[in-house]
Every structure is written in C-alpha cells, then in structure tokens.
Image 1 (cartoon, rainbow, N blue to C red):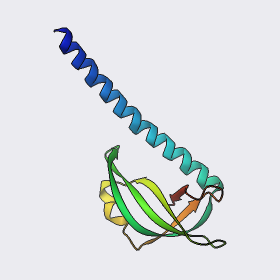
Image 2: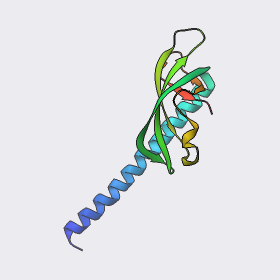
Image 3: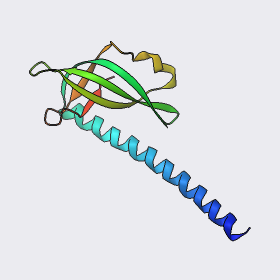
Image 4: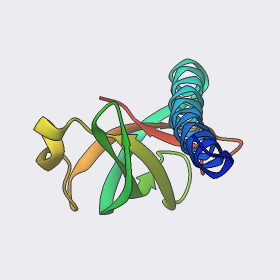
Length: 116
C-alpha cells in the first residue's frame, strides 16, 4: 500500500467516525431536550403547518423538521420548529393540518417537542 492509499483509507475511516458522531450527538441532544421538556414543559396543542425532510437518518429512521403553530392557553399562538425521527413505517402518521399534543419551554418557546 502506498502512502496515498493510506491517506485515503484514513480519510474514509475519519469521515465514517465523524458521521457516526454527528448522528449520535443529534440523538443525545434530542433525548435530553425531550426528557427536560417532559419534566418542566407546559402541555398544549399545536397545528402542523408543514413537514420537511432533513435528508438525515438516525437508526434508519428519517429525521424531519416539523413546523408548528403552538397554541398555548395563556398566551398568543406562536410558530416553532421541532426535529423528529419518524419510523419509516409511520411516515404518513404526521400530516399538515393535524393537531398534536406538544410540550414547550415557557422561557424559550422555540424549544418544543411533540408528545407521542
């Protein structure tokens, strides 16, 4: 194997490890946010405005951005976005126009999760 072959091999390994790290970090970050909002987030409903594919998969599940109009009881509705990994078997279970239960952080309303 030449020096150039070794550099290519090292580059491929580094790229794959880096890709794994990004996906793993995304999973942990979402899990921590979900856990915190399930504990301290305020429950309400939100209407799904649109869903957009991020072209990222986590454990073979596509990750989508879900754009919502959150309707709290004690304040005006606001727009928010949440990122969600959806099983390939239930991709059609969320559609624009649906009303879903959510939890949001009253101090940082952009932090929203869909409660499944």
